[in-house]
Amino acid sequence: MAETNSNPPTEAVSPSGINHLVLNVRDIEESHKFWTEIVGFKQVGELHQRPDRPNPPKMRFYSAVNDGKLTHHTVALVESANLPPPADWVLANSQVAINHVALTMPNREAWLRQLEFLQSRGVKFNWRVNHGVTHSVYINDPNGYGVEVLYELPREVWGDNIQGALDYAEGLPTEGDEALADDTNYQHFGTAKAPAAE
Image (tube, rainbow, N blue to C red):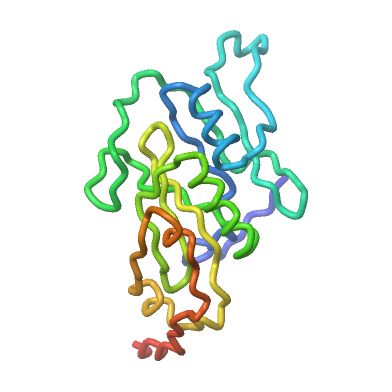
């Protein structure tokens, strides 16, 4: 029997991260190709029939690769044929509920290789930007969901000034060799003043 605490927490307990994301997609085969052949995830499973689930939805599970290891899933796709047609991705006033999914590359070199790969495959760069915390390229999947491919800048670049780093955005070219260039002369944001105690 579980023990009960007579003094429950007074605020929510913070999670350590997002475990996985499930996306509704119009065509699971089309989306499978994007998430495996373009993004590089590995399919690790799919829903199968069971006696208590004779007609499961078309659902597949995909994992990122971290230090050569797979997980149960990072992203899952569920075929939902009634989704509206995709629109071009935009940062604000989009027609899809999920603005974008941000994918961390293991390091700057892997990120640069992925940019070259994406460009070689004719993937449209919607936005190439140096944020104060990441260097990023935004593309979109076949359903209109934005996908941010990034590498995280060293913590000393933004320090404790998260707001200052979040406010920073340097737009870059989205085509040609200029879209593949990456300046490591990072903008530094120092340390933010601690908020005044109330």
